[in-house]
Length: 76
Image (tube, rainbow, N blue to C red):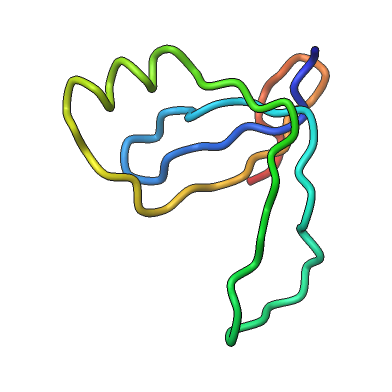
């Protein structure tokens, strides 16, 4: 599976994990309700798991990054 998206933690800059597809991003901003986003075929990044278990930190802001064929971030 070649991931097309990466989920990145804003505070640490670490990649939380990778996924093949993101379902539920309509582009519409709705303030009254919470949007449901599904990360299909999501796999956690081992470095992130080690870091979060060691530091016991919380996650507040995440970014969804688009990856190119070389799995490099091309857009956040």
